[in-house]
Amino acid sequence: MSGRLRLLAGPDLAAGAESLNSHVQRLGPLPSTGKALVEVIERSGLTGRGGAGFPVGRKWRFVASHGGATMVIVNGAEGEPQSMKDRVLMATRPHLVLDGALVAARGVAAKQVAIVVGEGHTQAYAAIAAALAQRPEPVLRQARLLGAPARYVAGESSAIAHFVGEGVARPTSRPPSPHQSGLLIQNVETLGHVALIARYGADWFRSNPTVLVTAAGAVTAPGVLEVTQQTSVREVFGLAGGGPRPIKSVLFGGYFGAWSHADGAWDLPIEPAALRERGLTLGCGVVGFLHDAGCGVCETARIMRYLATESSAQCGPCFFGLRALADATGRIAERGTNPDDLARLRRWSEEIGGRGACRHPDGAVMFLRSALDVFGTDFANHPPHWRAKVA
Image 1 (tube, one colour):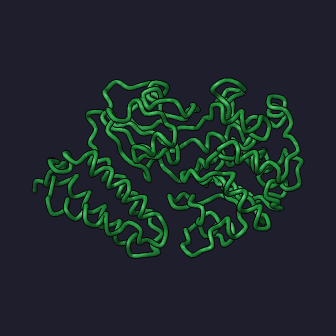
Image 2 (cartoon, rainbow, N blue to C red):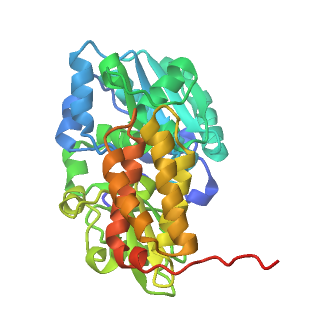
Image 3 (tube, rainbow, N blue to C red):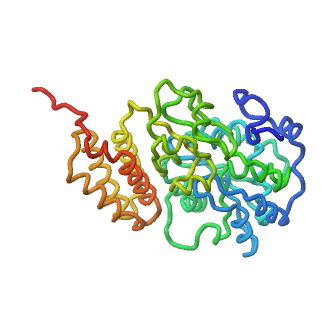
């Protein structure tokens, strides 16, 4: 286990789901674990890989010190359109994910496990279902396996909690948070790391932590890579096959992420602290590339339209505000620059942030603000991309 690959080590990914026998022969049995592992997870420095990047050990410590958890929820909804990492991990290494869920349940004294998989991720769902049938542990044999709706907001932690409890995958804004309510929700990649830390220890993980990245956009071989956090954006591009055209901008973190000029991001390591210094985050693990012939304004308009349609319609800032932003962005993309629309985008993006019933509008305006910054010249001088129909 000293190489760069950890989560995706083992049989060829093209072979599909690894069996329980192969998994145990390769990694050894899962050691007996309990509440003592909370300290190990804390010392490892592992942070959540679902987007927020919250310290996993701190969350476990809080839950364990407040009476433990009633349930561990495995979040494999993965509603981000560009992300593929979670479904690949579930489809190929399902027992690693289940090991992590078992370790988490033991660590916070949970008696129940629920596993939520995006309903469109059919291979992942089938792999997890088959793996559960192979497991001898009672808490896993009795685990609930649920298919989450194919909605962007369905993977948000409060939406996942609401879905497991009430059958509706809609974010909630009222406290307490899920972990304050006795629910420990963890992303599947996070639990994969937990399973390995339980075997090899905190120091092993800290020596060179890896992360799953989905390379998207203008690369020859888009897909999932496992790399160390010291890997640069330039290296991610190369590992994804490179591309025939120069890259002008990079999108970090998917649709709730932020754009960056390529020349300023090319040699950045995908390490959390290095990204935060630039106002960036890896978020859900997406690194998207836009080549020099691509239109940042049109790409931004497309994503803003998608985010507007994914609103849960729980509040005005999200339902009406995001539609207004999407409309204004779309008009600039299609009809050319309009100073009034450009002014509206800047004003509305400031007014909408922080006022939603959930964080969906916050993520959308963060993405838009980064676009207005990185593609500022393009937004100010954008030609029309449509032609009137001839009668």
